[in-house]
Image 1 (cartoon, rainbow, N blue to C red):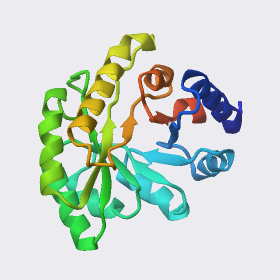
Image 2: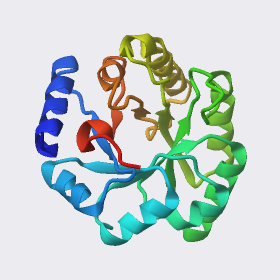
Image 3: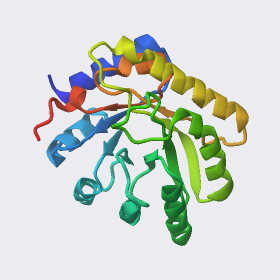
Length: 224
């Protein structure tokens, strides 16, 4: 099936689940070549997410006009390479990273939209803030780093055969998102809940996701 057909299928599913809702479909382009990314953009995929800085830079050089998001673990020494090139960083997960992004953003005279990455299922192999740390971290960042725009939350749910098993993870994320929104109504930038991937995006959308990250579903199985 062509990318355009797959995309239309996903859009139909989203419209069925939450009629009239705006859900951003992020094409995850890890190992995907430039021609396929162009094809996806032409088909109507509106934004693209990369996990690795080096791979992102190679693709950005050839496709600078696309909307790019950074969705992988970010090292402090790589921040300069992506600032001003990505519209959203999905993976702010520690204080020193916030500090470094803010410092460099201040020097460039820009504001950087970020999502706080939450390890909602408390998996040892995953990055992210523990759920109970999120509220304090959120307010520390809001108070101390004026060049960061905290725009929402992101999580990667455990991979399971039956997506129903991770519904509680997505539900808890939505509750955390709504709690923060209620505690800080002045932050009108706080609007994104990034969760759900190829295997579990329908459950994520049912539970309130408004950014979903699709790789395999759009581009087929990865060839590493």
